[in-house]
Amino acid sequence: MPPLTCELPHHRRLRHCIIGLPEDAQMAIDRLHLLRYAERFEWTHALDFPPHGIVLDGRPGEVLRYLHREIRSNPGANE
Image (cartoon, rainbow, N blue to C red; front, top):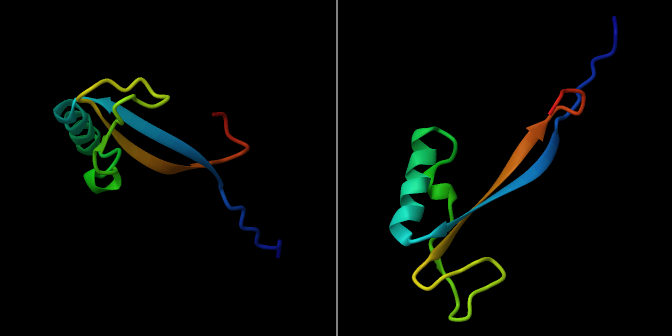
């Protein structure tokens, strides 16, 4: 009998950032939830931008929502 092999999939990190007005950020999260892409609870709470912004293009009144996902990939498959 041939030996059993178990090849584990490789993992890569994918990070999503939604930047916009709180209601627009929530609407985008809700739509991704309805598409069964990400659960609402997986996102961070809204993070306010500091007064002088950050490296991202933060504007007054906007918030940042963040989601980190692990992606399984098959190294032999086309990506």
